[in-house]
Each structure stands twice: as C-alpha cells, then as structure tokens.
Image 1 (tube, helix red, strand yellow):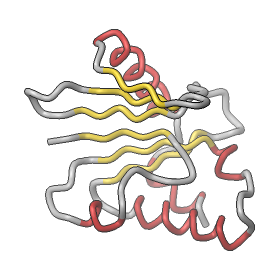
Image 2 (cartoon, helix red, strand yellow):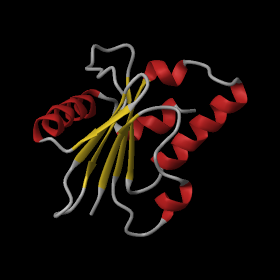
Image 3 (cartoon, one colour):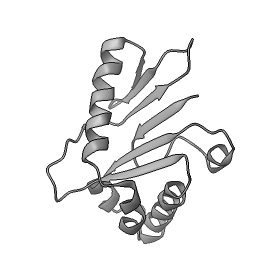
Image 4 (cartoon, rainbow, N blue to C red):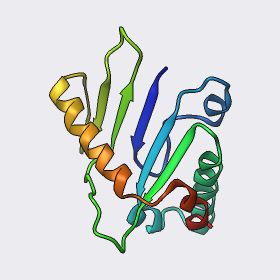
Length: 135
C-alpha cells in the first residue's frame, strides 16, 4: 500500500477521481492556518478551496489537520510530500524549492522529513476539528 503525505496549499496531489476509488491508500495532509487565512483569488476561490478540503476531510482514507496560529507548534517552513511505498519501492520525499523540486530516497533525508511530519501531526488540531474550522 502506498501512503502519501502532503504539506502544501492550495492544491492537493490527488484528483477527486483518484481519491474516490476503493483501496486508495491513506492520505494525510497538514496546513498551516496562516496559509488558509491568506486570501488568494477572492472570496469565491477561497470558498471553493475550503469546500474541497472539507470534502476530502470527510473521506475515510483522508486526514486533514490544521496547525493553529494561536499555539506554539512546529512549522516546517517548506512544502514537502513524503511517499511511502511497499517494498521493493523505496520511500521518497519531494521537497519544494524556490525554483525547483528535490526528490530523494536517502535514508537520512527520509528520517529528517518523517520527524518533521510527525511533529506537525502531533501538534496540529485534531482531524475532527477540521470541518468546523473550514466553515
């Protein structure tokens, strides 16, 4: 089973069709509240983004969490995707840079980004709080 983990906004790495199939791997997503409050494209675009996140959060295999502004929590400062595959495929991390994307399967890099992801997961709001936040 493939597990994709994402920390980015405003788009997600899965289309609605791919996340609706049975047997789709778990997908975990973290968003900093600051980027969710930053207005991009006007009220209609923001409403559509929030509705999309709420729709995804309602799916059984998707977890969406918000890193709250009013609490001291770990924030990575980089968008990254950590993808875990079943053997023989390696786990890989994709990190967004200013003008490029770096993809690696180096154990030390995977370990470092997994720690970042786990820190954000443990300090973010609970998944059941996400729909209320997005209203």
